[in-house]
Image (cartoon, rainbow, N blue to C red; front, side):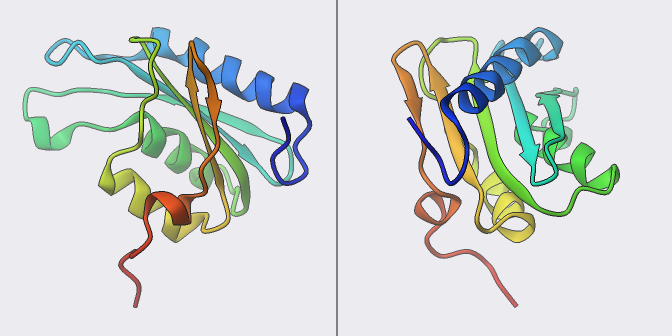
Length: 133
């Protein structure tokens, strides 16, 4: 299993980080816990977990938490993001996360982690018609 210059051990390590970050999810309303780990081009890994709020419009998805954490720490180029959820099945990013990933990381590989294995679509496959200026 390879992914644009990522070795299999890198893929598995990123998948493990995403799965580990599930423990930090705050999902008292939906019960749907998601973890993410994004790998910057300089080798740093940033994790995120979904965070729910009374006002559901203020929910922060794991993917955007990881992405924004990376951006706020100065990362600007990304190789891959791994996404895992507590169900053990594939967890696709929502439309808002797809748009954010496309805007800040248009070449990123998305790693969908499940008990069945890892799927690796590109963000362009997940969002074929992004909003662009």
